[in-house]
Image (cartoon, rainbow, N blue to C red; front, side, top):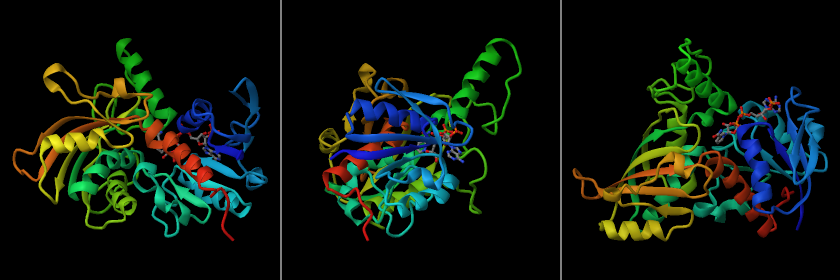
Length: 343
Ligand SMILES: NC(=O)c1ccc[n+]([C@@H]2O[C@H](COP(=O)([O-])OP(=O)(O)OC[C@H]3O[C@@H](n4cnc5c(N)ncnc54)[C@H](OP(=O)(O)O)[C@@H]3O)[C@@H](O)[C@H]2O)c1
């Protein structure tokens, strides 16, 4: 089956990754429409030797489209995704607009592709830090049960899109040239720094938690369909261009050995173990950038709690944390003949 597809937000960091992945995975396209804001309308993008002209994303732009890969921000999704669905398109949405809505499956294919068939036109891609975390949690939860996770993130600037990348690169250049760095996107200088606030503006709850942290907590429960999994998180931006890292302390319900955990992780779909610290073998964001899997290392039993295991993980958040996960969902939709909006 070939699909009439549109990318909403094609000029963005995630949108550009969609274009690359459609080629890389030989996605079965009948046609491809590329959409962005009025600012980009008329500009062009190259795709498989063709020049495609970007159109302004309006409701009518979705006429005749069967599948939308959407990543233009939450407010754009809230406005345009229902319009696309009204016109018969199935939308895989990368924003937080619909993730917690009833009737909207929140999918990481390796974890819960079985709920895809419940979609009513919209499928949500989880938050990037959540996707990266749940991949190694899946084999542990299946075998031992995950009771509690304590997570700290080390998130790349590209999580804030192109403007985040540009700000880090400009600040590094300014500092090298002895100029005062400009601070526009992040609340403090991000070059040579670490900022415990994501998103960079707004997004603080009364109890002090950040929206990013609460997404990780709530989305994990929805993805596993299990309210007994308790997550707490602290989200931090670091001056890395691409690829998020996280430390996880995972308390399990049943007893385990470290060798068993290592073996379960090594056998899990989408997970690669790199764990030999004595020989400097562990994942680092630079080496894991542009790769598909989530990489796991520094495996240790918690010295304060033998029921818990510590690990360090890295995953490319533009790829597996966004575009790749969405395209895997689209591939599953095609395989299961689900590229249609149920009546
Ligand atoms: N970056 C990540 O690591 C990541 C990971 C997971 C999820 N996401 C989510 O994916 C979405 C996009 O993120 P990004 O990093 O790709 O952002 P980005 O680089 O800032 O790109 C934003 C995209 O949205 C488009 N856009 C903005 N306003 C629009 C409008 N009114 N109508 C139509 N298109 C509009 C932009 O088009 P113009 O160029 O024309 O302005 C651009 O294509 C966000 O919701 C983000 O939370 C991002």
